[in-house]
Length: 136
Length: 330
Image 1 (cartoon, rainbow over the protein chains, first blue to last red):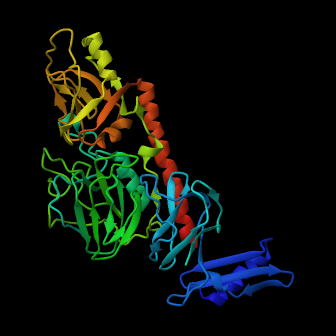
Image 2: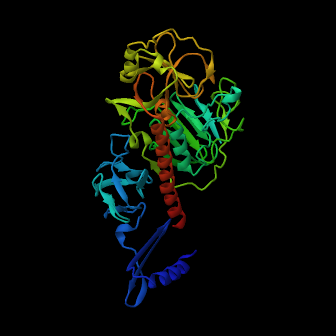
Image 3: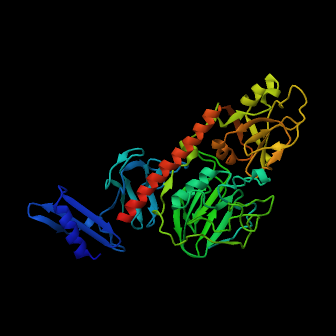
C-alpha cells in the first residue's frame, strides 16, 4: 500500500475513534497523524526520531519499547548486561530485552552508535512506545 | 541447507523420539532434552517435535548455504553468527554463507550439556519407523543412521518460511522451573519394582546422596557414583525384562545406572527407581561431573509434572504466536 492511500485509510479509521495521535513506523517510512477539531492531519516527523545515517547527529536517537513488558538489561542466563552506557553498538544489536510471560523480545539499535543512557531500570514494567535507551 | 564444518563428535539428528517401538525391541532415541527441542521449534513456528541437531561436544560449526531461520536452545554456548554474538534460546535469520559457531557451554545461571540447533521447518531427513531420530545402535534414522561429520549437508524442510521476529527468545525452562534438593540439582523418581529389596540404609542413602554423573555417561545411560553403594537384602537374580528411559538400575557394584534415550529396550539388573518422564530433560542436560539428587515422587505427582510442562509449552506457544501476529499485522 502506498503512503497516500495508507494515509487516507488510517485517517478514516482514526476519525472514528477517540485516539488523538497515531504514529506508524516501517522500513523507510514514518507516518504521524493527529486527530484534532478540524479532523485528522498529517504531522511532519520530528528531528529526534528520524534516523539520518551518516549525518552528524547531535540529538540522541530514542529507542522505544516495541511491546508491553518487563525490561531486562541482561539475558537471564548471563551476568553481563546486553549494553552498557558508553558502549559502542551496531545497527540491529539488541540493547535491552522485554520479557512478556516466558518470552524475551529484544529492543535493537536502529543504527550504529554509542549508548548514551539506559532510561529504564532492570525489572521495570514498560508500555508500548516507552523510551528505553538513548543512542548517540 | 547447512554444511557441518566441525568434526562433530556425536552430534546427531534427533526429534521427540521413536515411540511405540519398544515392543519390537526398537529403542526410543530422541532428544536428551525434549523441552529444549520443543522450545526451539516453537521459536521457529515449527511442529514441536520437528527434528533438530543435538550437539553434545563443542566447539561446533555449521555454514548456511541458503538463507534460513534457525534457533539455538539448550546449553548457552556463546553462539555467534559470523562475528555477531547471539542470545541463547532465541531465533535468528542466517544469510547464505554465514557460519554459526557454538563454543563451550557456559557455567551461568543454568548449567547444561547439550545444545540444539533447530532449523525452519525442521531438519529434513527421512522418517524411519515414524521418527527422524538417529538410532545409533541400529544404525538407522537421522542422517544415514550415524552421528554427523565434517562435510555432511542437511536440508531444512522450510528454509524460506516467514519466521518470527529475529532475536525473539524464551526464558530457559531450567530457570522458570528449577528443581533442587538441598542446593543440588534434582529429578523426581518413582520407586520401582525392586525398591523394597534394598536395605533400609540403602533406600535412605538413595534419596540423600548427591550422585555424581561419571564420564561413563552418554545417550545410552548415565553411570552415577556415590557413597554408600546400594545393597539389596538378598542377592537379586532376574531375567531380562522390558525397561524404558528413566529406569534406574543397580548393577552388583551398587552404583546406579540411569537409562537414557538410546537405552536398550530390555535389561536384567534390578530397578530401584524410575526418573519421571517430565524430568528426563533435566537429567539429559546434567553435565559430566555434576551432581544430582533424587526426590521421591508419586504417580500423581509424575502425571501433574507432565501437565506442568505441557502448560508451559502451551503458554510459550501462545505468547510467541501473539508476537507473530503483531508482526504480520504491522
